[in-house]
Image (cartoon, rainbow over all chains, first blue to last red; front, top):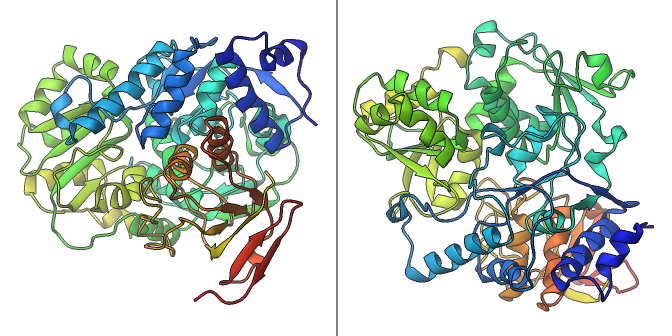
Length: 417
Length: 129
């Protein structure tokens, strides 16, 4: 039974502004469907609904904007379907551009901040431990929960903006203490230190976790204490793409897991699994749908590349020029950051194309006709074939740089044996 | 979300992300890694163990209902807020609604015509061609 406060009930009534009533009807109906006992006030929202999929999504947000809606909490925006800085990069007809642009504009009219990034947590949107938020975009949700210790469910598009307008989210799932307790211990201590030291291990571990352990909250035991945010970002994005993971813990690293016991709520974990090199190898292989050396482009930045990842790519390219198109998807904020230290110019000189505000897997950027796309992102590798028509090859960032220069797929297999 | 519906049963063994998995214009399953690749969800009673993946799946379901290529009912092994939201917003926008039921989809037959009852429950009869 859903209990609403007086203020929340008012929002549903005839005296409330129509935009608020519409948003509250949707939030309350979602809460009822989910069996939530009530709503919880939120401190921020991250909105995924600004990507164009068809006209219904445009009409929905334009109705809220025409009714005079305004968000009541800070709301960052995920990627849209257009690169507003480099508009010619997106291959689309006038109607697609018009509708996608209308959708993006309507969200800003509602008072959302035009961050246009799937990694808002790397451009200053970082809720604190225990803060209740309503985030959407699967990788952002898992990062907010796992790495920042904030509390968000895996909200769908459409609900996200309604939460931002009402300042409320359905109180269920990952907002509750009991849903955040780890039920599965994932032991990675048998894997070689060399593998754990490789960036490319983390998206693969995530892809394995999502496919093998969906529906559970895992605590990963045995990762280095200094595993950085870019690696956790890649891990979460992989897990949220292949499964429905909204939260994982890393023992000794993430805020709710000072150790395995605490993450498991003081109880022994219900399940335990020891990850082997063979499991990781199989998960890595499952990320590729092409086996040969053929290569048509490199796609990087899902989630959006950080400045550190851009610098790492520049290091791997080491002044050499790419023989196939290399796309780096990032935010306009990161692009500004790498301008100042010369990284942007170094990458541009090497033949890198920057895609901002959007990415190559959500909107048509890659050349028509398909081919083979190489990436170091589990999320790109997973969704690329369906969304772009390109076969995917997964490799490390070093593999991607080497392959870009060679014009064919070159992968260092030694780590994965 | 209750309601009457009837259509050919499309019982998918594997979870599916609608975004990156179903073409929002046609309802065809485009994820080559999914065993249902190439099948079309339009007009079916669609049974899924659960939704996975992208939070854009609610928006894809909204588009499908709006353009007439959606399933006529959704049977989910586990309640999924993301997919149900697409139906809630579809009703709010006046595009119509479809029943969404939580049920043991693994107990359903592979093929047949499924009838979803407004008072709850699903009957599957006949063999689909």
